[in-house]
Amino acid sequence: MTPSKRTAIGITLALLLALVIRIAIIHHENNAPGPVAPAVTGTVDLDELVFLKQQRPSSLADVKQLIGTTVWVSAGGQLDYYPCVGHRADYAHSAGTLLGAEPLAIKDAFEQVAPKSATFRIRGGDKQVLLAFTMPKSADPTKLYAVPVGFKEAGDYTFANDEIFFYDDPHQLFNHWGPKVWQAIDAHQVILGMNERQVELSLGQVSRSLSKEYGNRLVIFSNLGKPMAVTFVSNHVTTFRPDQGF
Image (cartoon, rainbow, N blue to C red):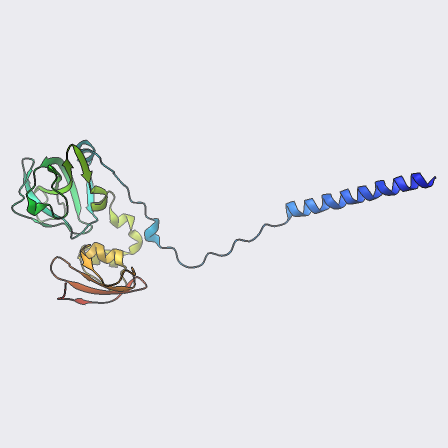
């Protein structure tokens, strides 16, 4: 065999060896286990996983789609409601203030000019839009009431429905809260261990605090004229007491 042939054979063998090594490396990379994802630490806030429906109404016709359904009050302690007769609310005689988690059976929706005294939470505009409803849990579940949920001005509507109501039963939406917490909410009371969302639903959303650190602060809830001072640590009630400073 001539030297040139031996050289050619050597080069060919070297190339084949390099190819075999490269194939082996590619096979190893393709079949090696991937990187292990770091373990998730901390706890998941189940409240944040709850899906809350939105209606996003833009007309009186949209609001009338609620007729025949039941909604539950989310914005407790915010809105007065009034006796209702013949598509008219008796603004002169408040029947009370809507409380959190209260079910309302919707019967009608209509427009009415509102006096200035009834425009504290919902603007008057040219006319307010009101929902007429009965209260299944009240002493008289057939009595009709009305509450403003929006207003009409210069032909345009503005609504607060999605901020005022749950469209599904919150007892089911937040069933992970457990029976003790729900018993306190339905009685509009506070118990140790409740979080801020739960206390807001129980005592109402009218409150004040010197801190913006949600879940770690002292909050004084108006509680319909019976102020309650509630201390939260790590978003759990640690102390509560009546307060006269609201």
